[in-house]
Amino acid sequence: MELAEQMTSMHPDVSHVIITEEQIRARVAELGAQISADYGDEPVLLVAVLRGAALFVADLSREISSPVELDFMAVSSYGSSTKSSGVVRIIKDLDETIEDMNVLVVEDILDTGLTLKYLLKNLASRKPRSLEVVTLLSKEGKQRVSIDCKYIGFDVPDEFVIGYGLDYAERYRNLPYIGVLKPEVYAD
Ligand code: 5GP
Image (cartoon, rainbow, N blue to C red; front, side):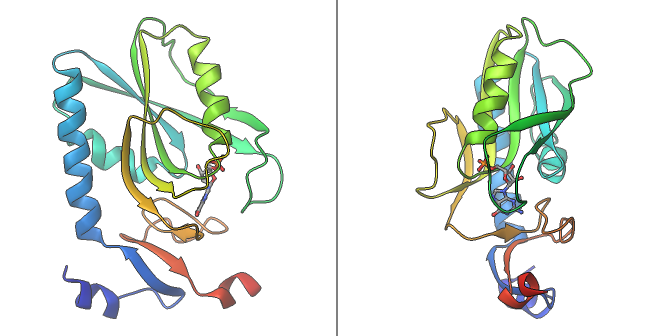
């Protein structure tokens, strides 16, 4: 879809689109090619962090030619929904052990990095063969802890974004693009 067309079909709560559906598709294909080149014929276990990374992992996994396995974790951070507290609780753990496996954590967005920091420490203690991270989005200049993130889809400005898996109050995950909500939506 062309940008102009996408703008006309934009959700009424969205003030502007920052990454279009086409840009996402092209970048996900690039990431998949890079990951396939790095892992080759080695199996890779994609550990997607629910719920935000669900759409990303569905598309990314189809762009990887290496043997892929999928597992899911759900975490919740204590505190308000739009700010990360760094205190993370595992709501749903992996179904399988990861010992001696190539684990690639699939995240939606890296903000302060606190969630991922906790998750990586937890996963590392389970002795995977390798442990890397792919994140669709990374907020520029926001990371409070340094995370070794091997694959980054896009750097985004420090705004609260929604769409392509990312929610506000559980809505907007199904938007095909990444956008910013109109301020009045938050005020309700
Ligand atoms: P961090 O611990 O890196 O600060 O936060 C990571 C998590 O906070 C993400 O996985 C995501 O669930 C949520 N988050 C951070 N920034 C945004 C944002 O701009 N939009 C949405 N929808 N969620 C965000």
